[in-house]
Image 1 (cartoon, one colour):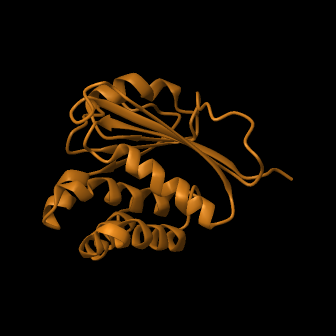
Image 2 (image 1 turned 180 degrees about the vertical axis):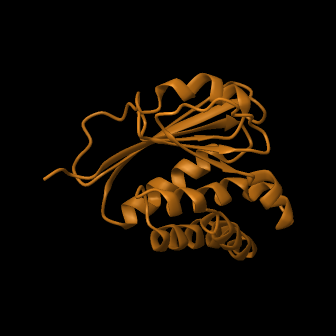
Length: 180
């Protein structure tokens, strides 16, 4: 009997909510009673520079927080695709922001999901929710973290300081979950 162990890397430009995406997944997984690690990495420029994070979700304690071969790869910009695509495990999921990333020759040994995250966010009136649209797609297309835990986490995180953004982020999450 195997235990649940999933890893993912999210990467893009600083300011795209990459680190927040990873945090929401980590907090939601903790709400589900799982062990998690979350490791951020960003360039010195912060907004506009490169940013990525790695998250591990497991039913058992995690020996090392290092993710070298993720099960899931979330790519929000072109340089990140070029940097990280080769490390995705065969059979894994490549989820990318098709508004900013051209993935003309995706690997044939992985599942690929294109999400027009920026366009969908703009349709909701706020480009800053592109990461939450991706979170919705991630929760719908993987077993990394469940829908209910994500909803509670979004409400908890945005409700503390930004109550007005809770509804917008839940709408973004639903839009992402509705993608096929």
